[in-house]
Length: 129
Image (cartoon, rainbow, N blue to C red; front, side, top):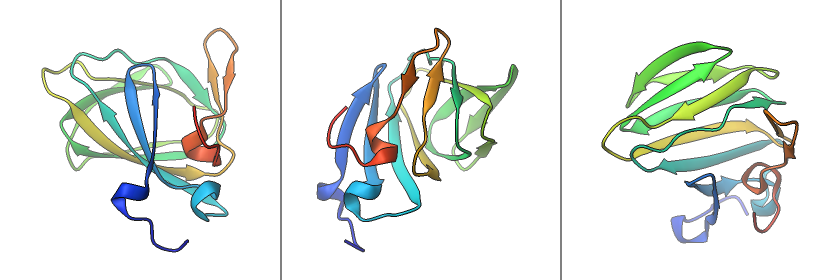
């Protein structure tokens, strides 16, 4: 499926964030996954360690990224590069929603602070969260 129309994207929700999945094995991608995250105003993030590199491009709004303990306040147009093994937290501390585009490789897992491993369906082609 080389073209994915907006109405064909798969929607998942976790920790108050909406993940709109476009590219994953479920839509024909073999190596990369890409999705849009929609983060409501005043949504706290969840610290997690990522097993694959992620490129996060802020489309709208402002977000606070904490990457390995270093805080980065970014706005629309900015990009964060998070290498595999990094601990990442994304908070929306603003009064407005934010939208972000993320690209990673298939197989991404997130290891939560309590050791729980999450294999997000928007990065791995699973049908639902």
